[in-house]
Length: 296
Length: 124
Image (cartoon, rainbow over all chains, first blue to last red; front, side):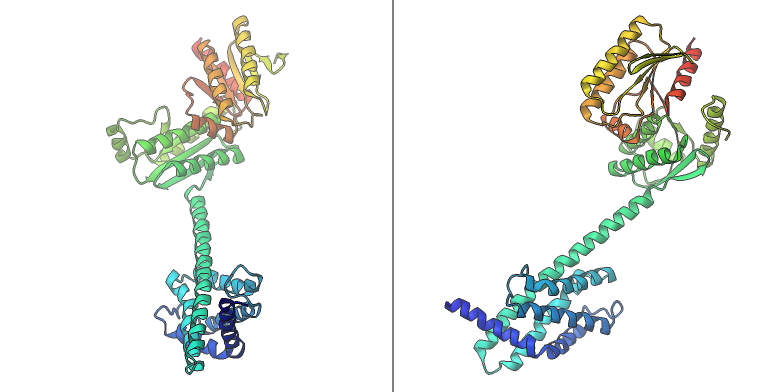
């Protein structure tokens, strides 16, 4: 065994001994550190729950140390510790803790271990130094892992929220037999217009409806890009053999479009949803007269 | 309703109906439209209905061929209705920004035929 390996083993023995014999003390000191941290959020988590999570995390770390590997977090010995930290990160993310508040959970263990090492090895500077070195390294590795898990959870939450918002932003409703309506609120960019188009085509296919009213009263502003997107959407509906009526074309929108030199081409438009619905009913009667559908 | 089948192209009440198979290739599409164009040259035809109910392929090359083929029929001055297009196909065509100004669209072939007959009466 070379000097470096021997030194590392000695450091490990110091930390292993600490986790083996002093787990209760470590937990107590760690809890104290967490309680006095500025980032403590007693409004989000109870002391009991925090203590339980801290205990389970300590048990997981002890298992990793027992397995004899403190450097490589991908080693099998770290499985329990990683699972515990992942649970903590997910819980903190879901409860609304900030990244720094979550990081404090694991990094406050560093202070607790330092206090204990100072108490135990006050008369052995070499052991104290070795213990501090390794405990710092261990907590840093675990801290980075915790932060990664926290970021992953937040990413997943954001992704879920985006898909929920997307579903809410394109609600296709059947407002009459063979008539669907989709109110558009906010801004219309190319990805939103694709979502609207998909929702409209899917709605028309599923319900076998004849007409869809695209209500743009809630659209923040109309510029050439938005008008182009709207035209593409209405073109898609026409290509399906259905009819599209754009309602909610306010005077403000009409003025803006005229000033920009834009028009809605051959698209049927109406200033209000009420008028749009009237147009839809008239179209249904026309289709019925042509023998293209049953009685309205 | 009188029917005269010629493979994928049939004649219904003076309207030439071309059915595009589900997995047609660009070459197959060109060949099908060549057959339609030849019949337009020799037969008195009210209008053309392209039945796309079965078409699932949305490859850009095929869509471009389709666009070109539809324009050829329009150049021959025959009203054309496209029937039964599926959402995926529509999205692909919209993104290609094909010119649909002189085309008619219908949900199915029956409606497309009625639409073409009404259109011819209107223009007569």
